[in-house]
Length: 317
Ligand code: 2P0
Image (cartoon, rainbow, N blue to C red; front, side):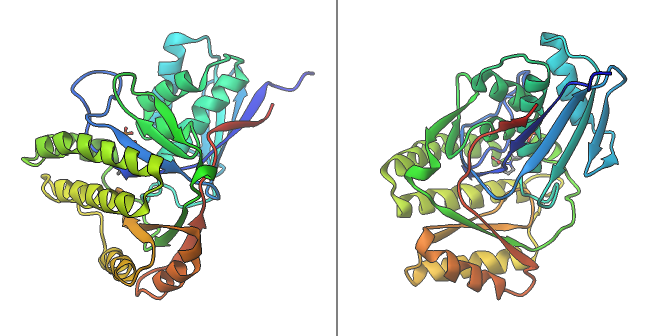
């Protein structure tokens, strides 16, 4: 008897330095504004897709799950390609759904594993397009290093290799609890906020400034625009009904600690996504001091560190 065909893919989360929050009013899960991210190493989603011939089954960390977004992603792939029933087994070596972008690495790994298992031969750009339709931030995790997601294609594109400017990321984990409002729901609600049009309009300038800062390796300029984009997004979130307040007291304490470090000359800036973790982005020589400082903040449960990693890739067939 022959073994069923299967393929395993690895992908890493990415962290947006210019944030995506809000969708354009058209099909295809198209963002309302461009974003710029860094893909991490160290934190990894591993997804194995096996062609079973039976109905689709999905396991997250070996537990069977019914995940509507994964089902929708498979349906969407089947509208374009001939894909038999599959078993999907996925695991993250970091907290799921707590603001560490597990959906980004998850859908990047899923699309890449389906592509490999079914021998579809898709380009990275097409995989990024398909991943975006499932979860827009996943379009960026198809690529490594510094990545942009912008009009008109809305496929991720590499801007600069991570090795060309190897920033480090210190993640202060302040809670392992999964968030109660999904990003998709939150974004839909934010579209009705009086802040939304200002957010969308001003993000284009932030994006241009951040792209320039990355290409120039200008840390101060990147720090300034990344913190501004983060706080502006959280301002929009707070000005949404019902309010989206993702922070806990330790989140704010970490932000203040990072600001104090930078005032002392330490090259570090913060960013926070749709969850309570604080990601401190720094030059390599500051990593140890930043990790020590954040570890001491009350409410910080543990510290994860990462560098810049590669894009989604197949591990084996
Ligand atoms: C980002 N986030 O740019 C922003 C910052 C969270 C805060 O992209 O609805 O899971 O699946 O396209 O990609 C999280 O949103 O949302 C996200 P959908 P996604 O990283």
